[in-house]
Amino acid sequence: MAQRETWTSRIGFIFAAVGSAVGLGNIWSFPFQTASNGGAAFLVVYLAAVFLIGFPTMMIEFVIGRRGERNPVEAFKQIGHGQWSFTGGFGLFCSLVTLAFYSVVGGWVLSYILGSATGAYFGDPTTFFGSVAEGPTAIGTHAVFMALTIGIVALGVTDGIERATKFMIPAIIALLVGLGVWAATLDGASAGYSYYLSPDFGVIVENFWSIVPPAMGQAFFTLSLGFSVMIAYASYLGRDDSLPADGGAIVVVNTLIALLAGFVVFPLLSSTIGLAEAGSGGAGTAFIAIASGFGSLPAGEILGISFFVVLLFAALSSSISLLEVPVSYVSENYGYGRSTTAVVLGLGIFLVGVPATFGTTWLDFYNDLVFELLLPVAVLMLAIFAGWIADTDLVDELGRGSSLGSSFATGWLWWVRVVIPIVLLMTLYLGIQSLSEGLSSGAYF
Ligand code: PHE
Image 1: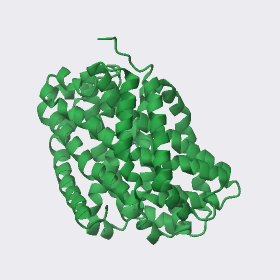
Image 2: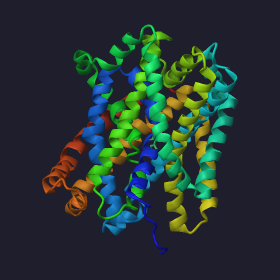
Image 3: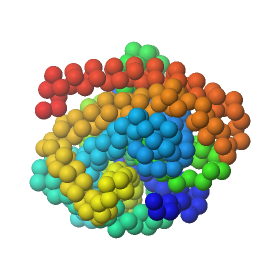
Image 4: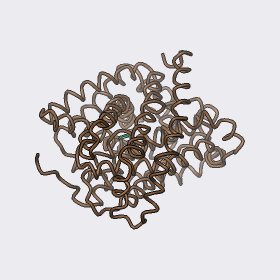
């Protein structure tokens, strides 16, 4: 076997992982999930999901990856539990399904870059959204986004992306802060903030069971968990790096960027299309809100272009991780060329994504399928594996390089054994219920 590369530096790893984590999930999906699930009530449950379930799950993927030192399927064999390699394989499958609709939304971003340049959405952002989110335009931009992803993965220029991420993350933060300050000056901003930030505990209690599945799905999705991506990335980590410290940095930066996006989108929503409308607006909410903001600004074209270009980069650094990991597995294990594999898998995924351009409710279906079914299943399998099958070996691995001491690692093990599986079984039950309700009521197609 060829000598495995390692990350050029620990910071390189953190940036690549942040590049995978920060994407459409933070700027598109997070505000729209929050808007349509009760605002601040959703936010509270989501933050709990990120820190209490997401972070420990990230540690599961990190320990499997670093101990396994192989791709996500072989890693399980290397740890001595080859029968569990389907778990890594399932993550690869989730990546590919996700990429199918991720690329459709990535295509919307391309249309918005163009629309910013020409001012096409300035007068009527809702109609503009409708015209680019569905039909031939959507298929075309989906194809272009997918081609870009395939191109980058085929050329193996992920280094370039790793470097680009170092600019992108500060750029995203700066842009969002700037936009957030501007959004604060809008009439009606305060209603947006209170919907976003003041949780009504009555609402949480009343809607708890319907908030949990999307909050949990969003937490896994935004942190790139359950897709085997973090297993693959951590397999290149040095023995002495502290996994909790690296993971903590990734989780905090990622959460911060999502929260910032909310500070832009909510004041915008309340001062433009209205919060009630936003709640039922679905996938288009964030795009329409942001576009209407740029449309009303003096230098809207320039701001719009820079915002959507940054969003495109964030989306690409995530989409390449979704394609890269399955491609490197297939080419490593079956000996196909890297470019051929990227093109063949990419084309297949493109076709799987085409139905998501038929209408935004189809896209909702893909979204819900991943969030409410595939991700909880994937993470449940990881937790059972780490907690009950591999157990103490992985605890040692978590302790290595970390100054947190063995009680942290033991606490983690029990959390992974007991709490995470219970929470996930519950999430899964609720998710399946809401998915089948959606299917039987004709909400999707
Ligand atoms: N975390 C990415 C986002 O928020 C999506 C993603 C999921 C990327 C899983 C890679 C793996 O947009």
